[in-house]
Length: 439
Length: 52
Image (cartoon, rainbow over all chains, first blue to last red):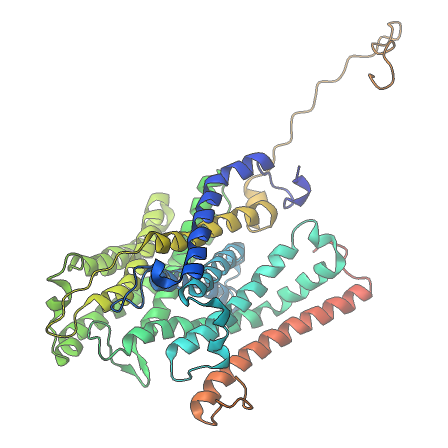
């Protein structure tokens, strides 16, 4: 039905089957949209945010998708600026994931600010003393970069590419792409960092506060570093899931191996820096503010020392150790385990830096305020997941996201039909009695 | 925010923050303008047969 739109040399399932498989995801999307409209129409009283939790599930989701979307800027940096040519076979997918992550972050922010019609205030009435202003600027600009990087992929659709103007536009955009990639890397460095900086400068919150370099707390650098380390893991994880769902190999193993190796080294160096940072914070920074290390991990129903172990050891040391070995990278199960653990590690890190920071009591008479999200918060947080699956599905179906797909999955042509018997010239033609329409 | 807005102050914070924003937007705008203009010229010259 829609065969003419498929990329050249690949096979796709029939359209009805494709749409039917997306049914449950669309249902999830509708649930999220309903919750989103409730938040906009009825207000933020639909959430479980309160005086203790001005930042909650949405901000955690925001920080997490931005970190996981870091695969786009870092892969683009490696491909266009460092010259890792092999990564051209995964860059389209990394850009797609980055586009989904950043558009999701902006969508979540549009719900979180309560009055999206005033979203432009942050640009026009900017508070130039806030790290979050810088985040908003860089986030918006970088989303522009990702849109520009995603656009050529859309224009390379088989039918759109036939239009000479779009074909030429795609060609010239590819030429200028290193400039856009460099701009994206610059913007990403600052907004990833500033998201960490926001936590690090909270001098009234000893759990998050860190010393640093000039105006930047160490969390600034750790956030950028972790996004560059864990973002590619998320890209690999989703590429592997896409391969599982489609039942095809889409990217060659040497591409995975290179990206996983780089991610492994980034993760290993990050986790060493994180351990040093944690040790210094536990023994110097926090005690200087009258807190002991165990005060952050006791006398509450949720936050024990387990969360630190989950973040640093299980979500950091173990995946880094796996990705640093060739055997680990080349064993499918080990590679998948490493990238999943890495993704869990960065999710926990962002949760801790947002929600545990707010939970830890800072005054002697305070207890640990606990928080659980309302169903509207859960639904709106799952909304980007549904949207992301749908966009990946449509992009995979109609756009050349995976340049190696046709080579890895050659279409076997149907065996030629046996030669027809020679016509019996004496016999009456079979359709002699039929009307032209019946014939 | 622009220098002609009433909130504008000529200090380092405004220059760095807003200057950075304009800088990034200018690069993206000029980059895209270059691509579009080149594509229009190429198309007018009859280039672009639908194959890379």
